[in-house]
Image 1 (cartoon, one colour):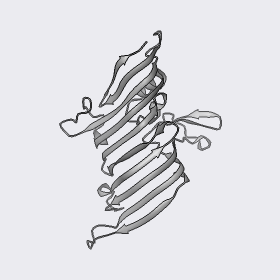
Image 2 (cartoon, helix red, strand yellow):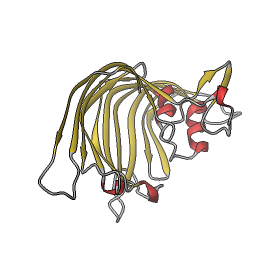
Image 3 (cartoon, one colour):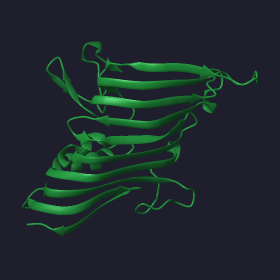
Image 4 (cartoon, helix red, strand yellow):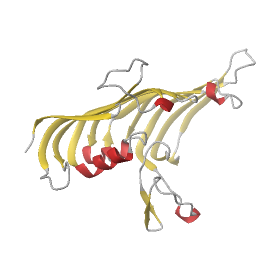
Length: 231
């Protein structure tokens, strides 16, 4: 993390059990933050005039790979339960009442939890988003081919009513849920947004589709675009 990181409060609490280490509570209220999340997002930047990303096997220390998520502000509460270095699989991080915004997303909000055994339950929403920047926020668990198609095909558009949900053990990903319903194992991966004034270049040698009004969904291992109108 870099930028103006402001930890409003940092408190610890514990019970009388010697088996559990103290819980850790942190309140954040920060501006101009850059988050380094190389295991989650494929956000490419340039270093030393060379374009690199985490799909490259580059071991040159002068060209370190950086995956940066830029945020105007990041505010919320982090609650780490049962922090235990010796048995990290028991650790759980709760994200409470988080809000964020940047050039791509306005009025973003998220909450949820991550356990160190691989279980996640995360929910996020945003009032609006730039459709041609959606590819940057597709996690690496989505195949590279799909991410590249979204990057090259979605030329423009104004997204609204953006929703994200991921629930289940990431070791089992990709989940097999259909639409926004959970699997029999209560697993779900789902992203949706309403798009207006969209432009889509579906494939080479196809004419671009313009003025799209549609609902865009990513779910499980699939993607769906339902359009009411386009030219």
